[in-house]
Image 1 (spheres, chains in turn yellow, orange):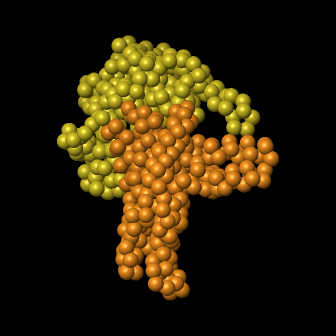
Image 2 (cartoon, rainbow over the protein chains, first blue to last red):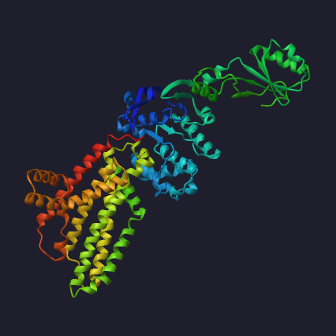
Image 3 (cartoon, each protein chain N blue to C red):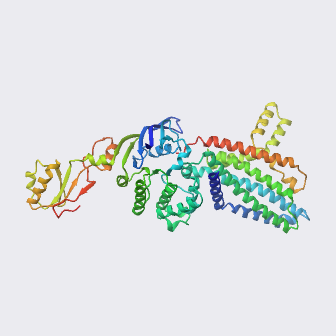
Length: 330
Length: 256
């Protein structure tokens, strides 16, 4: 069963001056399965936040349906199983973190000692124990973001919807949130989040849904991305005689140079051994052998620029230490 | 119910931490000033009448002004700053949210009025007098008036800015305080159309005059318990209707 299914969502807004309606979402459709992290990727103004608000019932679609846990998203009781972190969250500045989370827990139907225990555990999880008595108005942006995640996961939701969860976080804060999200995925929770930070998305997601100008332009699994580069290998080496290029003419597609290092794009997987042998024989040193495939950023940039093709200058996502040389590095 | 209570409690806390109790200090200052400036101009028990008169007027006026000032930003601020997204993405109904907000701000204003009543009682005691049941009933009616006005403020704040909310609410407060007089004036001097218009306005606008028994309380004139009952019922019904309209507007709102 799909935990979240969006079908043909259209949404338009009326211009305050001309009263003309402008369509922002043009039939957005996607789904998220149980236990997966689905990334929602798109440039500013693509319609990510509008889609998220429609899922949560904070906006109404002109057309289309949203079902959550196989039921209509209009059922209010479903919201008890959803956690939401808004973009640039603003929380009640007059409350301290403990009061704020207790308030959120009450709104989600939690109470008593169970709530108290859960509040304490969540504060500890987001690493804000030292600040739990501090009013939220004194929190930094990163702390607010973590407080926002705390309120989203407090009631142990089955579906987590996060709008730019890494915005404003320092590396430590990003790591904390990444670890929490991975932990939640291990527990079978479904996570749907939008982000501009592509490495985080690449590190976390099972799938990515790319949206541009209110249309879903690609829905791709991260394993598919790795498969896109199958068969393409890059050998990085140095210190060999340049004359061997002539001998390898049929084996390599392209050579790039950066300082002393040569980046050789091998045309076929089965030529790798021969290329490495040539380099060794001419006294060269193999630094690494890299399986080439496009990164999520390459795919994103291509889709956003409208070409939709595979990246030409794809760089490595997955590197393999070259075994056997003893001198390679990864 | 528990969720409404949580929202009300949060709003109550917010109102208190927004220095609402500072209003009580202003009230105390005005009373002290009236004691030392106006009271010497009067003699005997008239001194206490001056304090009571000023006190009752201040409780009513400060209640109304505070309701407008605090209430006008209440919903707007949450929508503008997007704190409302966090509330409404949980299993909280929109009418529950509005009722919670209304209950919280009304409770904070009632607390403020109770504190002002206490200070007034102390000032009257210091003037060798006693606060009479009639004065307490007049304050009770001021509380009802504040209750109605809070609902009006909440209604406007569901769809417009704090400035316009304050303006519309103040206009309604003034019109509501004068609607009975205007109707009487029209029936005596106006034409048929004027009479009809004033009749319609009289029933549409809040009739805030029913909550004003301050003159009777100060001068210890009689007023019937039926008036109190009518005023209470009127406040409850009018508040309920206005909050219902507020919900009708609010339930269609989208939060972009």
